[in-house]
Length: 350
Image 1 (cartoon, helix red, strand yellow):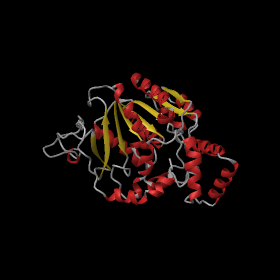
Image 2 (spheres, rainbow, N blue to C red):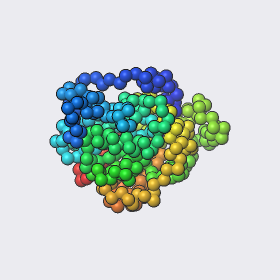
Image 3 (cartoon, rainbow, N blue to C red):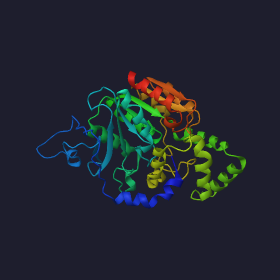
Image 4 (cartoon, rainbow, N blue to C red):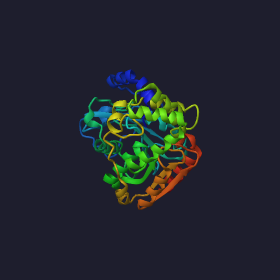
């Protein structure tokens, strides 16, 4: 999701966050779980050295990634770790956004007795933000998910990826399927070309005058033009990203905290033209390799074609599809009741 208006207005704040020490407030009554598969030698293990032992941290745990060079922020919600059989790890979108727009899940999953974990991917929000372009690749992020899984001590868990997180979830399933109990791909198609076909069609939602302006600006690659940002933020995104007004505060907050450098390197400067290192990503021909029980979620007004989500379910070996008729890309907000009805129903049967 390229939310350029927010990215441009918060570049200075992002720089401050990148250099600031990340400290988690000691609040709440949830002790950070210590993974059962993390060894405990006479000295502190790498995981222990990042987290105070025996201190309540509101479910927050820092996990080492990139062979311990950096750390990412994770948070646990729900029943005490280990007291339920259903555990869900959430992968947020972007690339370069954060977990914040997924905070709607807190109102549904814990109440259903389901454990949930989310984390800010490296370079995002509460996690370390190194200035190293070599880190922003799909392969590296896939390995990061595995590092987080090990750090949290998760196994036989459900992985839910939304948008760019759906790409990451597909890649993880193709590489580490043995650890999964279930897979959920929310609002993400299986290839860049099908994404571009859908977003090109959605331009027709604009009035003829606005479409002409957008086309002219794109022809000049003038993506930083204030008028381009206005057309996207005021005329297109309210139709295809989130259709409720005003946008929920967690959505606005996620936009403000987005890391533009990661987004541009992996996606590009435009929502409608992928020029980053994801431009050739296609996994339609490998979906049949995913054997774990799976769910795909699409929405009528999404920037991803819901027909693609339906097709993806037919190509995986044990998948079903859910459809949100009133939703857009963030249908966990604008078709909330239907979204969580499908999601919780799937989780209880996974």
